[in-house]
Length: 217
Image (cartoon, rainbow, N blue to C red):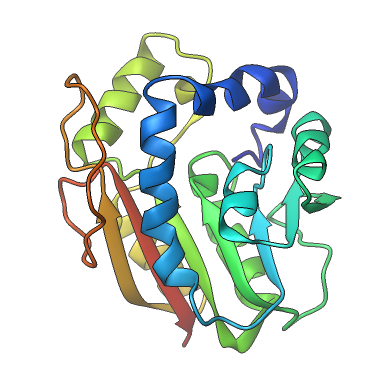
């Protein structure tokens, strides 16, 4: 969710949130939640989601605190029981080593400086915690599909910059984080009817959604 795109999500928060209630969002969302859940298991509390948006993932995954630069989505997240903070991922308003988990669900696609967001996530992370990143990679079939929609003028995807796996790995390394666990789902190609599928405990190149868990180096 947004960093530099906060104004966009401020204006279109209702449309963004409605995606989860209709096809294909109502099928894809449970797959993404199931992909992220095993990467969070066992991590010490409290948990923070950076780019919490309307709080869908935080609520589903039991994340207590959510941060976002857009106020309107935060109001929806608060209605869903999330403790919300207005702020930017590049400058987190928290003390160091506060959280056992920092969750970033497609956040890095929408921020001005992904490396700064990861460095700040590392700063506020406990030594025994982990950063969990949910990604649509640029080189995946779904990443290519969303990029094409963006080029055609889609209001959300036109604001996104999808990262490659190499770009994410380099940014994690620079931020002082090491990926140790992976999961993936949505291996169905775009353009077919999306159906439920099982999550795989690896990072498959053809997956439409990938989860990476990274710990302090």
